[in-house]
Image (tube, rainbow, N blue to C red):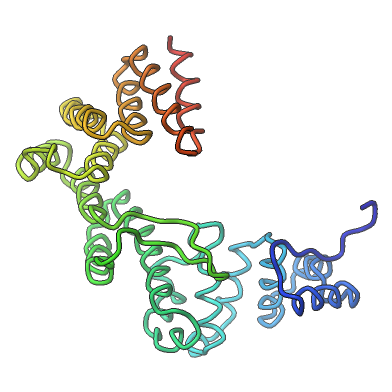
Length: 308
């Protein structure tokens, strides 16, 4: 352990891959250490960047900048090759953060050449990756008040979002599913965010009381997620009041970690700190019983104590 680290791999590897890593470490010129030195010296050759991305991934120290640089070295026609399309699919996310935007040349190539990728990867997993990228850009379009991109992205999700499964799961290259988004109510949540961003709080308030006259008829997820969305996106007192009503209905009908957490955040936002403390403690109690990671609620508790 006191020696100089020349190479590194992190995770679970097959016997051939493990042996190959040992041979790389012995050869030295293709080690993580050697490639890092070449990159620092300014090597931006396409073949080098391709190998460097693979070594960085095996060492669990991926860099989205290196991935983007590799794609930028390629001529447009090369984006359609099987090797490049596979690379785009495999390197499109780093720790759940999208490397490419929905409108990037890389993802445009992936979308236009799906049959090529389907030959190597499960088609549903390919679609799910693209949809997660679309959702990230959809949120950005709403924040930036970009109606044109919002319309295009929401229409894409309307077309491809699966309706026969409860969750949209994120597939890792090694086959694990490490992230999930509930499908039911997801598009309605984005539409509400867009309404608040584009039209304002009054329009969102009128929409909710007109289109959802009885929130008690909503399922648990839709009720809680809508209440949470309102709190995150507005400071309007009338809309916050409506969201608080929904949060109160949620803890009455569905007393859970999630419902109490949303309710506690509402109470904190509205300055009702003693009640917020009680709700936060209840959320943590229910969350720990179900093995949830309650860091957000614990941090809220600290802020409440400071106010009190």
